[in-house]
Each structure stands twice: as C-alpha cells, then as structure tokens.
Length: 118
Ligand SMILES: [Zn+2]
Image (cartoon, rainbow, N blue to C red; front, side, top):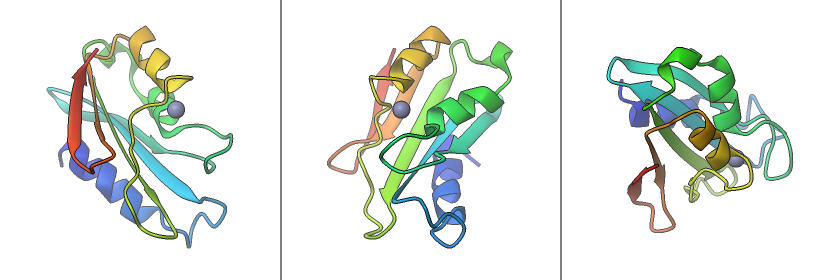
C-alpha cells in the first residue's frame, strides 16, 4: 500500500461512528523507500488535541525520519469533503523540518496532490 493509499484508508476506517467527537479527520503517514513506517490520525477536531502528524512522529522509528516523506490527507466528516491538508505552520511543519523530513505531500484547496521539498 502506498503512503497515499494508507492515508485514505485511515480516513475511511476511522469514521464518525468510532470517533463521534471529531468534526474533521486528518491522517498522516510517514514513508521512505522501504515503505510506510509511521501513521496516525488526529485525536480531536479543529480545536486542540494531537495533530495527525504529531501522532505519526510519535509512533515512527526516529532513525528513519531523516529524508522521509510525510503524507497528509483530511476531510470534514459531515460533508465528506476533502480539506486542504498542508501541515500546519504553527506546529507540524516545524516538527517535520526539525526531524529532517525530505518532502511533504498533501491535498490543496483545488483537491490536487501537491509535493513540497523541504
Ligand atoms: Zn498540525
């Protein structure tokens, strides 16, 4: 399963039924040439909680982070619409840079995949 496939799988798996407190769901996947090695979803909605990226970093093997790819997707549960899923500048982007992540990929406002080299 590619990182993008896993990210979408996580969105589908963790539905409103299991997490009724969520208004949005974000999924983050860390991968390198050997495959996916860390992933998670957010613990709350738009306000507070652990962001998906933070959860993924916590669960990943730190030795594999340098040069890895961070993939993020998200949707609003009520409408099912995809959200712009660029890692937030306040917390997650800095975390990615700190860990030496090589590139980030996310869905933009036009719902197209964007890849950014960090
Ligand atoms: Zn964030």
